[in-house]
Image 1 (cartoon, rainbow, N blue to C red):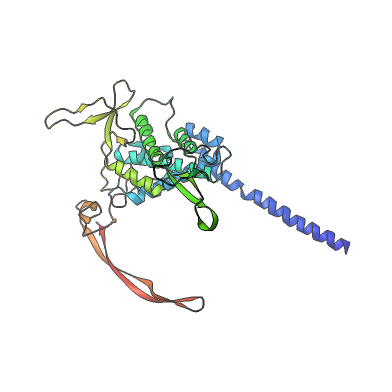
Image 2: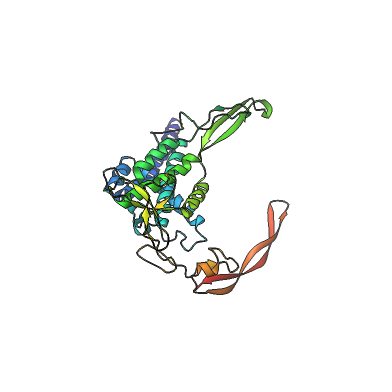
Length: 354
């Protein structure tokens, strides 16, 4: 009997140790992914990434989220963020290498995405270096507003902001080029959208649903909102140039017809997106910029906007196809625990650019 107990104890111990060992082995792949990601970054970013690999991997996730929102916000434009990869962002290749309006948006949304993702990690306790914001600030209690107090877990925007600045911006020792000035400016504009739109969430505490104590904490805007606000800045982006001393960006103005272009010494607003060159033609594919063109894109025949066939197809015309697919319909719940549906035909007309 004693031998049986000893054998059973040894067997259970082996299972527990295997589970613990398995848990330990489950973690390295993410570390390996992080180090693999760090290895192909540029020198400045590579050092920061290797010092904190998991934060670097989170930065990559932030850029991935940013590109997804970019696609959502430009799906009605000739340029719809397609053809832009995470590698392009970190290596500053193809569209990110140009000093055009579209690259200004990409830099801004990517810097905002990194800020957002790192800050989320702080709130979730993913990093040893940061947690909830210890000193939430901002909008205090307004006149006539019921009393409340800071509490909960305010999102530590400051840490995410500083990390994004150090990780995404060209280093201070980098060459003073127009591109580097543009990147710094647009990255900052992206981060400021989060900073300027920090809000507060509140929760009531008390007996039987009463609000004896109201506790509030700071929250970031959702990335959907950040991308949408940056889209508006994209439409109002400011064209700039580098001044003669290479110390700042200045606005570029076009004079009246027949007169030369002149410059104003005023700097562009820090919250604006800035660019310096003319955008490429997005109607046709261009490998240099990673542009896929608009051939095959779905367009709206009845729209006169940017998603309309006339605009989106660049005057090449469009093809019309009748589409049919099977969908579930007339669904009904049958007691107990079953749902019965009919199969219906869904028909629609699809227009695609030639």
